[in-house]
Length: 210
Image 1 (cartoon, rainbow, N blue to C red):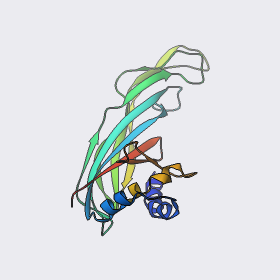
Image 2: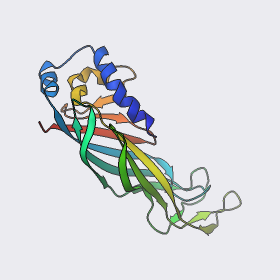
Image 3: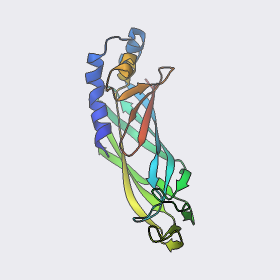
């Protein structure tokens, strides 16, 4: 839920102190930054139940959400408007896991996370409220048989949290090689990523505004 990203923001400073090498040119660039624009791309990739209730219907679920905000490096807080853009959920490898029956039949679209609203839960964290949508479906009568029956669809409320973080983490690319480090860096050194709860991975790309 919310805590991995909060922990991540706190660990940035600690890991920077422990890292063995620094790119001083990059450090000078980010230390001079006062305001930074962030594009944060969340990608979900995991196996999930895609039918409502306790039935054997799962798929590899890929979903995306993009959050953009402005970060005050001095106050270490999110300022100005926040924008949230959803991607459409993709399903692969739909099966009745754990059975010898055929896959479920979905009579509509499964949406893993569709944002409804967002707000600031603190000065450095965004809370995104959303809905998970299960379509009506036909599922097997396992373990009694593999004959199919219809079940209803439904909706569930879900939440995501996105925390702000100082871009100075990019000063320390060696952090990505530290055992147990929650941070990974892009090959071009312009972005950093961390794994969140619920099979989400969040990639931060900062741009200096002033």
